[in-house]
Structure formats: C-alpha cells, structure tokens
Amino acid sequence: MEKKLRIFDIKYDLNWIDRVPIKEIKEDLIILEKLGATHISIDPYETFGEVDVHIEAEAVRLETDKEYNKRILEEQERELIHKQYEIRTFNKIKAKYNL
Image 1: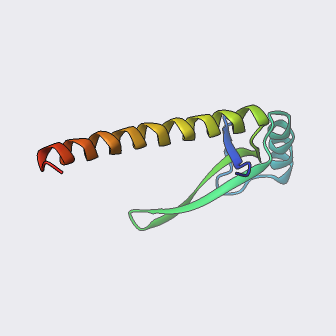
Image 2: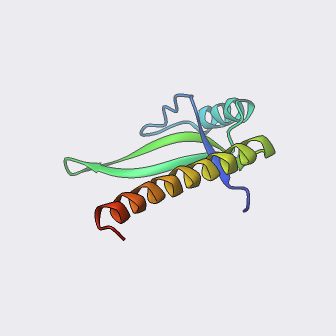
C-alpha cells in the first residue's frame, strides 16, 4: 500500500475580493508559506445567479510514516470488525435455516 497525499487547510483569511494589489498578495503568500501552505485552492460557485469564488490556503504533502502506519492499522481494524460482523450474520442465517 502506498502513502497518500494529505491536504490540510491553513487558517488564514484571504481577503482577495475585487481588485487586490499585487503587493498585498505577495505579502499574504509570504505569510502563508511561513504557516506551511503549499497551495492555494480557488473554487468557483454560484449563489442566486451570482458567480463567486472560495479561496483558501492548503498544505499538501505525503503522509508521514507515523500517519501511514496509523492509517494501515485503522484499515486493518475496520476489516477485522467487518469480517466479524459477516461471520455473526452468517451464523445467524445458518442457525435460522438449519443449514
């Protein structure tokens, strides 16, 4: 199993509405990089016929070894719980129909 990309929102208010001076955007980007941001997400959406965009900063990286191992253990635990559920269900059906 391979490591997955992880995406974390960076809590920083980007007031990039209408006309934003390039100087202000550069200053915001410097701050965002210091906060660990690697990407800017720009998602357009429509509300009552008006088109707008949602802008937020994100940190995108591969999961760490610790995160990877935790995810693998959680997946194995879910699979075990599901398997136990299936066995219990099978045994109930088997008993009900005298199989």
